[in-house]
Length: 104
Image (cartoon, rainbow, N blue to C red; front, side, top):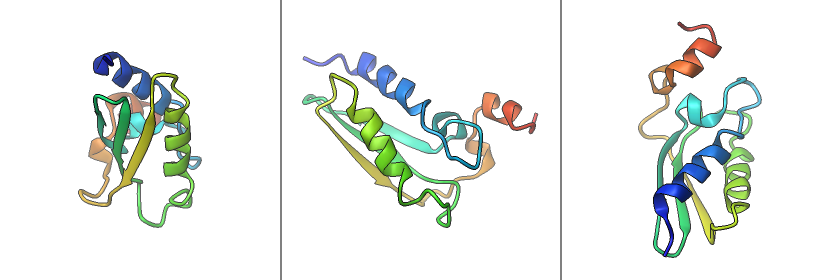
């Protein structure tokens, strides 16, 4: 049986290594990850967005996220759902991200 809480923490750690190349903050701190679900079979479902639909990495970032999360030994498969609703805005960023970008 999978320890979903421990696996979720491992997924978050990996997500913190994914960056939008135009913004020097990881996608977790930017608030681009709307949800993580892990089922009993160790499949990971990630609901994410981008800063805008015109984001230059719209075609590559979800695949990068999938590949990095799938590299976790305990993960069987990864499904990334790219959504636009609710739209991302700066309120979704963590205080750490806002501080790093000079918004605080």
